[in-house]
Length: 187
Image (tube, rainbow, N blue to C red; front, side):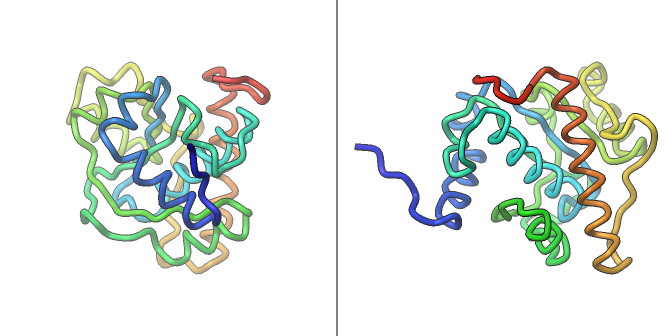
């Protein structure tokens, strides 16, 4: 008997547990990694938005995302491991009607970089840092915005966070279209 979570909070908690478990990762065929500096703002925003987009494109309720074989994750190149997503980033997600996952900052590792399909960095400096750390992933490491850096909103007020989240949302949609994860496609 399969028991489905009864609240959004329960589904997000289960999603987080599965996304970070070894078994859950091994069962995924398409994993997209978003990278920034501290893994408390831009990259977790992008991962949350990415997972909401993946669920919508696969025509799954967000609470059923664990049934998909695709997932978005995030990491930092200089994260304080265990730090939560900033309160402002969480609020920006709420304003965009994106479920706010429980988040614990993690650093990029060579293992993680090697296991994902694509790596999308917030800036050219992040991309360079990823490639310097793991040169073999250069071919799959891109800036999220091919036209420029996604600037860090930290310290610039709530409006900057919302604008950043909206920009990331558009860029995530663009990148998912680009890699062929289209609306209505089942994995």
